[in-house]
Image 1 (cartoon, helix red, strand yellow):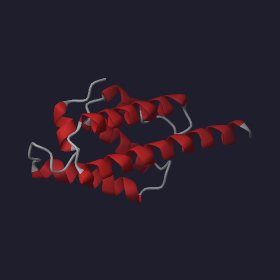
Image 2 (spheres, helix red, strand yellow; image 1 turned 120 degrees about the vertical axis):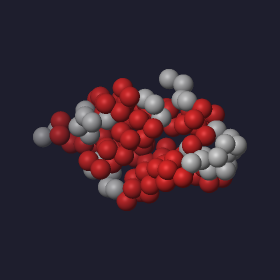
Image 3 (cartoon, rainbow, N blue to C red; image 1 turned 135 degrees about the horizontal axis):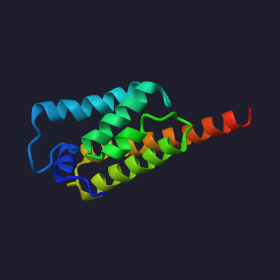
Length: 125
């Protein structure tokens, strides 16, 4: 899926196009909220869903409501990670914006690993 130019621009501060105040507040508040949440929490699921909606990927947003250990959730995380990496590669280079995307990539990878861990711990019971 190709990410919209609007989403690409919005994810990076200092890009060629100006952000509206609500857009700035929206993306930075999502990242701040994500940083405060425990990996695997329902709040984290909600934030990932909002990020997928922001990027225009509604099927991924819907799959992110599945249980942490489900294959559908891991597929959705992989898709979200791919979308975020696409945004990163298409974006105008900006140290602050790239830092935000790097954080999102690391966090999504951590959640993916936690999902696999939970799956196997429940499978072994």
